[in-house]
Length: 341
Length: 293
Image (cartoon, rainbow over all chains, first blue to last red):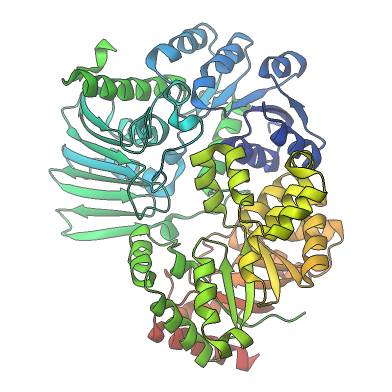
C-alpha cells in the first residue's frame, strides 16, 4: 500500500530509540539514518546496526539523505528548528511532545507549516491508549449529558533529589513537570472538551532549582466547563506516570486512568468498568506499549493516504498556549485569557 | 534442559501490576514488610514450588537476602533472573540523561568488574565498544544472584524486542554466548512479540530457544494476535515459559489454566502469588493439569 518509506530519526534518547525500533519493525518503513551528538550513542548504533547511517548534525542528514519522513525526538528546546527545516524542505515529520519550550519558540514553526502545508504529527501518544480512547467515545456520545465539572491529575515518582540532564533546565525543557510530562494530560483534556478560554495556576519547586515540581491549576473551557489539573513528578508510590480524569455530567460521570475506565449513568443506575484487558487488541509489533505502535502506524498510514494526522502541530501549539498561560498566571497571580497568548 | 514447571514471579513484590496501579500500590504497601515476602516464598516452597523469577529491581537484593536467611529454601530454590529491570533504566535516564544513567548503572560493579574494565583500557575504550558495555551491564545486573542456583537468565522483553526490531542477530548471539560461557546456564528471552521472535530465531539457526511470552484465553499482551501466537507455538520447536496466564488477574485460575493446558507444549508457567489461599488454589489447579499430561 505504502511501500518503502525512508525514515530518519533525530535524537537517540529513550523516545528516539523506541520510535526507531517500532518504525523498523513496521511493514513498508525503513529507518535509513539517525542523528545524535554523543559518541557513546553513535558508536553503539554503528556497532549494533551497521546498516543505518549516523550523523552528528541533522542538517547534514536532511541534505544528504532522500527521506520521506523525519522523526524529531530531541530534547524539547531542539524540536522546532529541525521541524521548521523539514517544513521548508517539504519533508513530512513527526515531532515528540511538547512542541517547544514556549509559545514564542513555536511561532516560526507554526508559520512555516502554514506556508508549507505538509503532513505532520505530534507525539501525544496517550490518545492511542485504549482506555482514554474509549472515554473519548463515551464523552462524544453525549451519554453523560451536559458536562459540569472535571478534575484530573498526572503523577509519577521520578524526582526526589536535584535532577540532572536537560529535563531540569528551563532553557532546554521549557519547564518542569507541566511542560515535560503533564502536556499529555492537557492534550487529552483539549481532545475531550475543546478549546480553553482561561487558566489559573500555582507552581512550586522543591527538588528542582530551575523548573517546577508541583502544579495546581484551573482550566475554564469555552463550553463553560471548568475543572482542575494537578501534577507532580515528586510524589511517592507512582512507579509509572499515571493519569486520572474524572468527569461529571448532569446524566452521569466517568473516571478514566491508563488502566481502566469506570462509567456511571443515572439512567442505568450502575457502574460499568472497562479494563485494559477488555479493550486490548494485538498490534503488529509491541515495543514499550501498544500505544506507540498505534501512534507510529497512524503517522505512516496518514502519509500513505496523503491525509492530515489526527494530532498535528497546530493542536500541539494549543497545548503550548495552555502551559504558558498556567506559568504566566502563577507568576502574575491572576487568571490568563488564552486568546492573549 | 529442564526448567521448573511452576515459577514464582516477582511482580507482586515490586509493585508491578498490569490490572491497575491502585492494586500495585496496595501490594507495595503489603510487601514493604519483608516478612510478608518471606511468608509467600515459604508457602510456595511448602507447596512444592522450586523456581523463582526475579528482576533486578532495587528490591531484588533485599529479596535475595530474605531468601538467604532461610537455608533450606536458598539451597533448593532455583532462580531465573530477568534482566535488566527496564523501568529502572528509564527512570534513571529521565533523571540523569543517557550518559549519566550508564555511569550510574556501572557504579555498583564489583572491584573485579571494574578491574576488568580497567585492563581493557578504561571506561573510554568501553564507550567505543558496545559489546563491552553490554557484557558489563549483564554482569552488574547479575551481581545480586552470585552464589545462588541459577537455571536460566531471561533477557527482559523490552531489550529482546528492541534487538529484534533491528534484526540484530549479533546482539542475540553475543547474549547467548556470554550467558553460556560466563555463567554456564541457559540464555532465555522474554518477548511481547512471540511469533516474530521465534521465526527470526529459526531463520538464524538458534535451536530450541527458551522463550517467556504471554499466553492467555483472551489474548491479552499477545501480539499480533492470539491466533498467530498459537500457530507459531505449534509450528516451531520452542520451549515456552507462559506468562500473563491470568491476564494480570483478569481471569479466574480454573478457566485460565483450562486454556493454557489445551495448548500443545507448555513447559512451565510463571505465577504471581500474593496470599496463601491464592497460592494453594493456583498450584493445585496447575498440578492437576500437569498430572494428566
